[in-house]
Image (cartoon, rainbow, N blue to C red):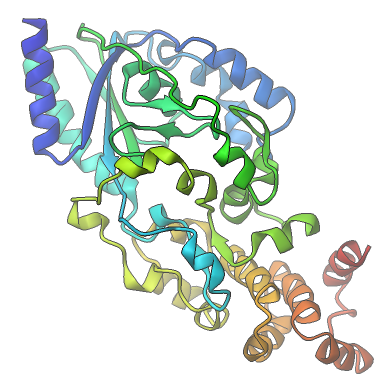
Length: 372
């Protein structure tokens, strides 16, 4: 009977478009709480203050919902058969993480999860709650505990069937459903993900300092990106796929089947010249419905200016100069940095004429930090 219940849920999950489904208990994954405590004690969360604010509820599923008994973890494949690292050689374009080039996965998964949760409730009774990355749920350890994959040395989930490319969601239920076995760690001696990181964000295998991670810096970090990381960013303007892309298990990856996860042309590594001229309305229009929109225009253009400064493309000078007068001090400061990198002679001319931003205290302090 227990196996029949699991089979029926799995059949329904796949009919809804999920590519993987596994089951686990609501017990805390081994070592999860201690790992989170260590991460927070060292301040490696950076601006992500919500991690500390919700730490106690994150440590164990039942701390979030005491009545939970079982957890159904699902995966939705978002592979697209391309090499995410190829764009890094095309410095006139902004590299966007492959997960963000399509419809926001939260919206795609949530609708499917609601339908699946209703089916679970009809079959097993009890109460259900669904979670897709926006609640204090440690989804990767839970997915590993359920056997969907294992957390690699880069801390992300790796699947033997889908490589690095799975979106995760979960259904907590008060019903008792037999648990699956956890997946073993298959990383072995490989350390490709650790060695490829442009900013040395990994403090060791299975440990990351978010404050050095380009994904964190370009998406979550609200202030200036520290000067020591700007050159290493290259043309990455939203996220970084390097550690995911080099994983050998990607040889088993498959292309995504859900049509809503098709890559959108307007978000597919766009030319920097198009990004640098976006105002807030233009930004919102171009990236509506994608994860990119959540960063806001100012942070996105900040990132694009760093990419411009790294591009060695003189055709971007006029776009950069126009942003020296931008309403956002975050943008103005990076325009100063980018212009000096892109055209030292033009920067010197503007500086001689008092037009390079030195009259702006916010920009000046940032420029002096970089010059030092």
